[in-house]
Amino acid sequence: GAVVSQHPSRVICKSGTSVKIECRSLDFQATTMFWYRQFPKQSLMLMATSNEGSKATYEQGVEKDKFLINHASLTLSTLTVTSAHPEDSSFYICSARDLREGRYEQYFGPGTRLTVT
Amino acid sequence: LAKTTQPISMDSYEGQEVNITCSHNNIATNDYITWYQQFPSQGPRFIIQGYKTKVTNEVASLFIPADRKSSTLSLPRVSLSDTAVYYCLVGDAWGTGTASKLTFGTGTRLQVTL
Image 1 (spheres, one colour):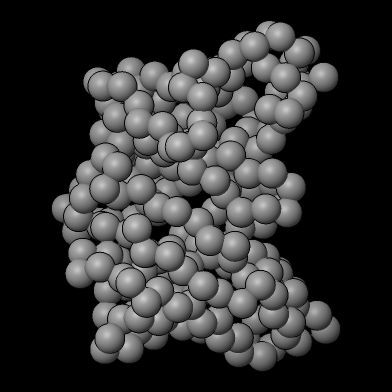
Image 2 (cartoon, each protein chain N blue to C red):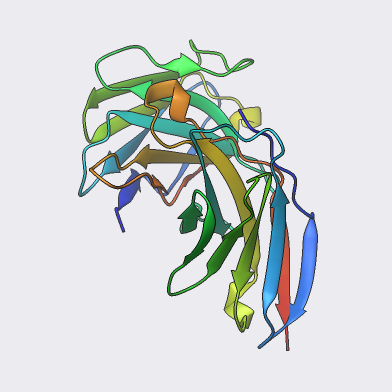
């Protein structure tokens, strides 16, 4: 199946700093990517929809100024957690849809573990 | 967006067939049903997807009744390595952008033992 990668796989940062997480579709182009957050033993929560060449659409309750999303190309979306705080520590997962003819699957990256100290 | 309901957890012995049922009463005409598997600290992995009737691949089968208000993921002869959380999602496969976003429910935590 299609492959989605994330970098870094884990990151530790100090409170107040910003962290950038990259999401790439490796063998297909994705006009739309999605960012999720998952706390321990909980389900994935959709944060935002990232659209190539336009502004991201954020879910209710997600601060767009804190979680900056940039979908710079058809294979890359980035999530920047600005002025991170310990409560932002979580597992961040991106996904992308493979819209090649006959395909409707959505593929997920391996996730990025963010720890804010 | 169609909401899904699944059992919170299930237990099985190795070698048994496991059936996980998901209800999605307000599924829309354009919605596909997709099942994902997630291990701890990993992203969800695509298992199977279907629109109606039955779909089978090398790892699972998906049964969808005519009214499409529910679906059943069938895992034949589970092993210890199938211990994971299984999510049922419905979404607009033809849509793009926000129309195609998938919302996760609570999922079913499957525990397989010897």
